[in-house]
Length: 294
Length: 239
Image (cartoon, rainbow over all chains, first blue to last red; front, side, top):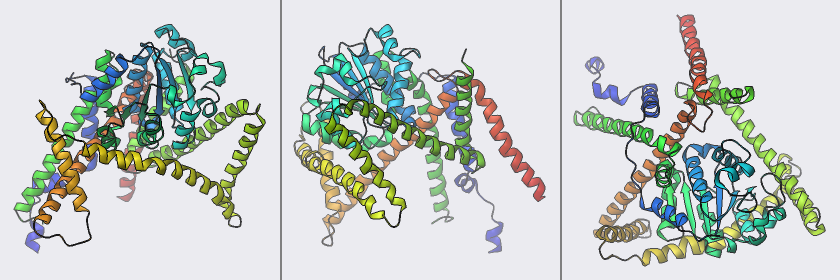
């Protein structure tokens, strides 16, 4: 017993019990370093990102696209780049854009994104200055639609009742574009940028299964595995998980943004995690082989 | 040049970001302060947005007597939720809850059977095991069908599995492990992205306010200084 107590602690045992603060410190370094001096690691384009891009690129002129902000402030790091990229792409196409938010804070994030796209100006005039898209005629921002899944259904059935006014309080009847857009049947494409429930499964239930509306979904990576079966079944047209897909989309539209600048840091932080997983496993098997661990 | 209000906002955001991350050092008053302020402000924003929606809706619905009646009925019905806090009238709270649950379930269940059961089975059954010119897709489709069948088999508990059946169960377990691993990989990706997103903010990368970069070291010194200083003081007192 005394001999066992005297035994020196091996390097592997030390590695198994690294102070978590050292790991966090290394993580700070692994993330801040590539952000301060980008490495420029290549970003390859996945099939779904290309499909989403091609769908918007080849959309019929005059089509109606609904962009739904289904996330809160917490989803900004992963989903904000998607929002900016989609809106930037859509505003360059001859389509009508209806922006909504099923999540309460989503409406505030939506306003933030629109302001960013026009350099901090009032989006109602700023978007027209930059993209030539007139508010009320080419695009509208209806803000938050309450009720979660029930709200999605209500909005699909009668947009004018579910969204009586836009984000800034203008009655929906005073928005000329909305005169001919009343139900989900008038919508040609739905883009849901989301971080959870209510999200894609609810949209599929209330829009895709009822009206057959094609849907592109950008989701936080952690939620992607849950949606893969919906994508496999064709209920979702394209699935864009996490910030990596945002970086791919930014590359396709030729507008590098927050997604692209995250790509390097994402790679270095993942490399760090992989290194720790390998070290942990080597330590575990080493101690097990030496009979120091069961 | 950013205004004082914008700069103050950026400083508060930087301070609270670092206050939350100070939890990685140890639990401390900074992280608790950030948590409490976050909860309070999130609820405040929620209440404000609810009122905003009510005002907008009333401005349109008030001209139609039927809609106006439903508007006020809805509000009265919603107020019944507050009887949750009364022991005597708790039963009144159950009415709006029953309507919410009933409506939500009714809407969801009627569609779940189609979208999450029938359509999924149909999609899996229609997978082709041979896709001309695309061996990888053929392999993927084959694997999907085999894995799905094995995992479904794994959850048959009605009789004791022996012989080859046990092999299928082992295969199913491996398949599930691989699935959990992939899901965990995505989880790590999200967590890292959240952290990187805040780092982008701290570095003032566009469209974040550039002054955040100036405030980052200042806030870091304030938080780290107080934490390390307090720890040093405690050690000294203990000694």
